[in-house]
Length: 53
Image 1 (spheres, helix red, strand yellow):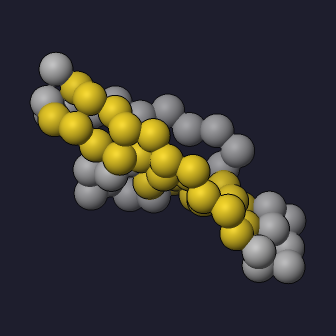
Image 2: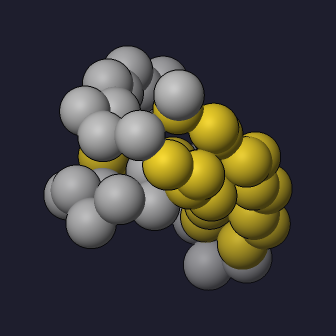
């Protein structure tokens, strides 16, 4: 089993699943993270900066 954890960087709940949608409701710059954990508990993460104007 593989877990995908999406953290959108704005104190919203982490979303688990292979894909996710999110709407930012306030202006600002956020760092969104995706962390993938496999069945051996190995993890990898990637981030992207999101700027809302």
